Image 1 (cartoon, helix red, strand yellow):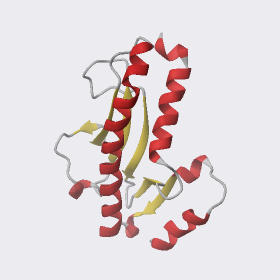
Image 2 (cartoon, rainbow, N blue to C red):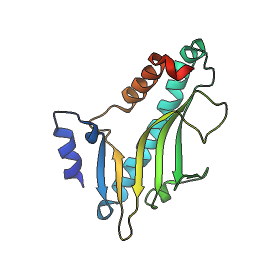
Image 3 (cartoon, rainbow, N blue to C red):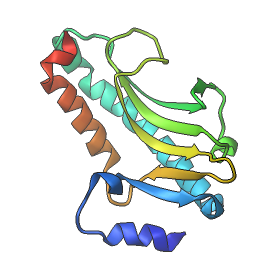
Image 4 (cartoon, rainbow, N blue to C red):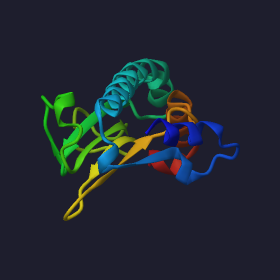
Length: 156
């Protein structure tokens, strides 16, 4: 599995498809589980930090309800007590969600960055993992926030 990660580290050009690493079911192991765990925990810290940083700018634009959080679900059902033991359960998904329209509603988000998604097929599944080797999660979240601020249509 490390060879796959190394290939992504050495790529020179960044393409949209490079934002995610495809992981086959037979490559899912404790090392990958640790990477997902660290990625999600890092995303939680970044979400809190960036929410504090951008909340005033969104308030100034008339959207006082900025919320950035890590959402986890299995087949669309958000489960509050999901642990790392369920990362390899089919249809498990984690993402950084951004909302500024609705107060205290974790079911609705305006945009997101997917962190990990394990989509299952009939016989075997495969996962997609945010490529934190090549991409900067904090920078990607900030780009989304700045795009939202620049898009005045989203504030109507």
